[in-house]
Length: 444
Image (cartoon, rainbow, N blue to C red; front, side):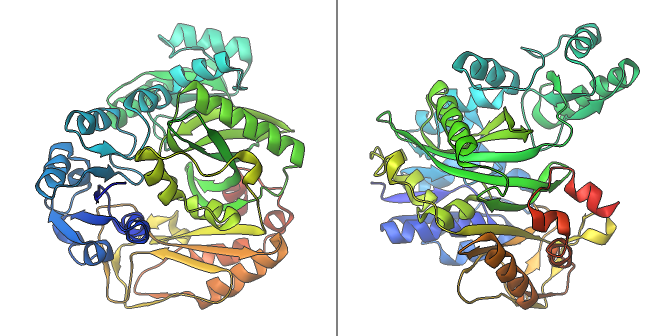
């Protein structure tokens, strides 16, 4: 087992990793920028290293992160999510410096990070994929040809990344020309590669992802699904499990497909295989080669600490579970409490938290790095907390969510809490039969 882990991240995920390390008896090193000096992850780590001014680029500065690990004698680096978490070059640098990267191999990250290559690998492995181009399209002529073969509407996606960047929809040849140019330019700016691939647009899907764990000894299991369909601009807002519209057969089929995907990538660690689900048919979308923001949903549903499992797997231990050992109990919903104004197109709303009072009681979990008088910097993601509620069934989880959100007091900034309280009164949400178009339809 590792003696000391450096956390190459900030905020709530850095604090979450520190807590797991403490329970495993592992020392921790926090890195921080000058504006994050008062963040809780800095206070709770055993050691800390300042890596520069308050820009997000500091947390992506591989030489600085490696230097911080070397001067503190850290023998492993946990990247969390975002920043360097899915950077294959960084994983390779860690290996060259004999520092363990807590995540999959650089080869697996590259394979799944290239969305076009991942599609090809999934087709070969027998995992269902959305109809579309086998590789990145070479130009407009090929894009139009593929669009005619599969039928409009179509979606263009950046081959080298995700998160909604480099994605465009087209319904006609004329629209496709403009969408292709825009998607390529955006992909180039965001990921350094202008390659995009094309696939059939699934109009009203659910976004369902399967959590997997894989060790270095050949064991791969899945830990069930999470319904992540409530999102805006491809950014998730609410996640829940079990998916309200999934039956046991479909759940088994999707779990088996996720395991096939992980084996095809020779994956090690915690990862998530994401699918689009429509009319009882599911299609591979992508694989996230890291821990997810919404991992607490699975933790509360299964009782398994995913961060500890990541660390154990990276240290070479065998998974202590077989598929038959995994039990799913109750219903769990997570809400991302963002410093955003939902009434103004979810515009970021950084500033000072004059009051920050979190809910409690049975079945309520809060993951957060925020506190009263904390100043939310404008340089990073706007999420300040995650509220996770659990009930014996979905109805109880919804009631508990209402109660917990009512208790959650945040003053000094605007947040997504009022939006969630409205969602919890929405008949479409209460039925569970909502899709990725929910937020757009809600505002209409």
